[in-house]
Amino acid sequence: MADSGITVSGLTATGGVGQIALGWSVTEASCLPYLRLDKVEIWEATANNRDTAVKVAEIFGAQYVRGGLGKSVSRRYWIRARDASGNLGEWFPESPTAGILGTTTSTTPSANVLSDVSANAGSITAGSITGVTITGSFIRTAASGARVEMNSDQNALLVYQTGSVATAQIRAIADNTVASFYGNYGPAPVMNVQNDGNGPAARLAGRGLNPAVLDVDNLGTGSGRDGARIRNSGNSSGGVAFIGRASANGGYAFYAQNGGYGPFTGQHDAMIRPDVALVEGDIVVDLRVLLRRGIDDTLTEVEVANQRAQKGALGVVSRRVAQDRKFGGYFAVLPRDDDFGLPTLMERLICHKYDRLVVNSVGEGQINVCGRGGDIAAGDLLITSSMRGKAERQDDEIVYSFTVAKAREDVTFTHPDEVRLVACTYHCG
Image 1 (tube, rainbow, N blue to C red):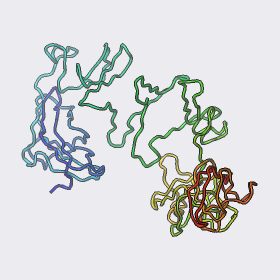
Image 2: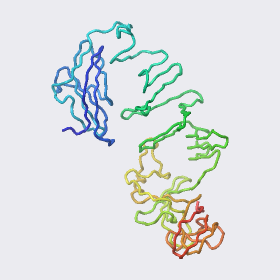
Image 3: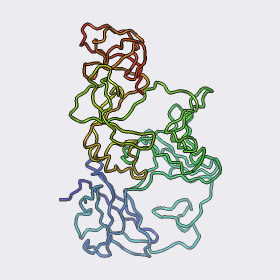
Image 4: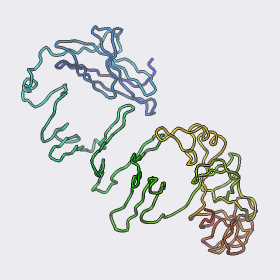
């Protein structure tokens, strides 16, 4: 029994001028990526004996043209599927002495006479054209319906869709890049995408791990060589922002040229031991610095606040993330290789020892507050309390080193240990 559940069937072999065109059908039994079709192996023999056959091609798809043959040449063929994990399917034909016969034609057309190829000089069936230049109004795969056209009048490649063909695709086979565009002319863009309908001009979706679904890399150096510029030019007040500013322009990860950030919540990474309990909205304080990188980045271990007016508050926990112990967690303080995105040894050690926290330290959000400092009025300042992780009202209106936040709503407590989630602005950042 074969290791792969992918089956191939219906193999045909049609002879042409110096070549044999093969076609078949593929049926996949699994939708799991590692069990999907990788290639179809094509084996060829001069005799009707699979033991003497040699593999002449590996194809992702359902057709192949075996070229480079002479006149009246006969060959026998067998095929089998291989999945992405390397498992092989059953042979077709199953019998090692029932190879599909294909024979090339006995005559060849005279040179440069298309009428010898077809009576109406309008088509070439099961053939190929190599080493020539084709000039004309357009070339198309079909006269109507779903088709691809190369139109010289419009200087365009046009892809038409129908109800039965929902998408227009450029597909990569195996490990190839899906599409590669290269430009080398002045300030013109390499690629310009515009949609005059109601949908977005472009949508990117993927399941890639390294480094990301979208990878923008400016290879130039000097001022103005930023990674990406995003702007809304539909009106005069549209926002304009740069992502990945060049070092000559300050080296910002994100820079707003026009417009503000809204809504804005500034967040920090922090690490906490997996056995430490907390809930979202609790206050954490710095315990010790784990890693440093340059002037801009540090990573600390934190603990849950447990004293009134405790200094060192980093902020309020937005979420807790259990780290991938194998692939790490992508920390700014531990940059990875740009091409492969492989985690460093230190990153793996950190992720094995800690959980990751996303901590709100500046901007707006919410915070867990108890009633030990009394009822709260909008505008009251908040500090840590003796209740673990919770804030309470500060006695005065002076911003101290231990001030954590400012309330944005009135709150009345029925008991000193009652806990409420209160809207606030953060003052730790």
